[in-house]
Amino acid sequence: MSDKIYIFDTTLRDGEQSPGCSMNTQEKMKMARQLEALNVDIIEAGFPIASDGDFEAVREISKTIKGCTIAGLCRATTLDIDRAFEALQYAAKPRIHVFIATSDIHLKHKLNKTREQVLEQSINAVAYAKKLTNDIEFSCEDASRSDIDYLCQIIEAVINAGATTINLPDTVGYALPQDYGTMISIIRGRVKNIGKAVLSTHCHNDLGLAVSNSIAAVVNGARQIECTINGIGERAGNASLEEFVMALKTRPDALPFHTDVKAEEIYKSSRLLSTLTGMMVQRNKAIVGANAFSHEAGIHQDGIIKSRMTYEIMTPESVGIKHSTLVLGKHSGRHALKKRFEELGYSLNPEELNNVYTEFTQLADKKKEILDEDLVAILNNKFDNDETSFTLSSLQVMTGTGVKSTAVVELSDGKETFVDSATGDGPVDAAYNAIERITKMNGQLTDYNIKSVTWGGDAVGEVVVKVIFNDVIFTGHAASTDIVTGSVEAYLQAVNRAISAKSAKSAEDPAIKKQANAV
Image (cartoon, rainbow, N blue to C red):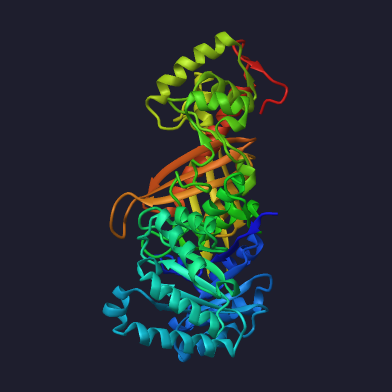
């Protein structure tokens, strides 16, 4: 049986300290519930003395979340410790997390204290916290730049005072894996009572080594990893929970350890955090980035079609993503193109595929990504991105607090005018519902983005939407100084493209064999 590694999630504390990532109590509660569903062992809910908001969040999470240990951070002072326990007292499993700096750099320039003073303060703080709860974590801030002899001395002393977890932060992301692993190994060898405590890591990513350092620590005896969803945190962030967990799951041959994390909840956790904070992950982010399970190179696509293990070391389903994506672009090959046409309901013989592939590569040189409607356009010359079945004649919306949003939409197809109204969750949703009632095209909105393309109060906003109609994604975009109008025009463009594709699908075309399951 492999050793268990405890996952200490600090998304709601250190992660929230990332610029632009602060969350209110309600948002923290949503994230805490998802962390409980993810089955992390410890949730560090905040720094109670930092603000009334942080105190409130820690208290509410302590009252609600019962499946995880709830930790509150505090400095090595009685005032901080009392405030932390006041918030944590409702938790089924409370943990007081005491920290103080131990490096000479911090002692001299930040604390203005001697090693002896910090040692005494640490012992007193842990002993005081131990009177309130049995679960005490002690962190040696800037451990990776601390004198190793002093580090061993203070660790032994606080364990004697009652600490049950010893955390050794690489606070500024300075350590290299071999150095950090050696520090853990030395502490395990020198500290006589180390067997009474769990060794923990808290690595920052300033050099991009947070996960590597965490792994090095585990190999050398650490059994708790402090990390965050999406790797958010101070400066360059913390060790990424999803990267660490999946490294262990993917390489049990080299890393004979396990966590209790429900990996299938990883992607959902990542998306929720992005939604709450507005901080989106980079497309090439490991595990949860948009490109993590996407393939464009023709050789890679051919391999994936034949066997996913050729270019995927884990399945997208294992982290909660529905499937891999074959991104069609200028690097794609015939096999990927043929497979996507089949998914859209078209079966092409080799000659037809060659003819289509030529046009496809020419278009791919002009566009970064080929969309489903582009493929339909290649097959059907009559499909035109500028072709419209319906145009927006007028739009009226009513919305406000305490009022159900209503939209009245008037569309024209060039021959006659259609008017309908609908309600919805906001003016845009109401207008979309009205469009669906008129066009009889029921779609599923999968992506909705607005960005400003000019400046000032009358800035032009560009709206891009992606909508699924009959398993095919159609894109629409529009620019307007009125966000609601732009949103409606973008959605209407996607509807028109879907209608045009549907008409082309139904038309007789001897060059195309329609499958029985055609859209």
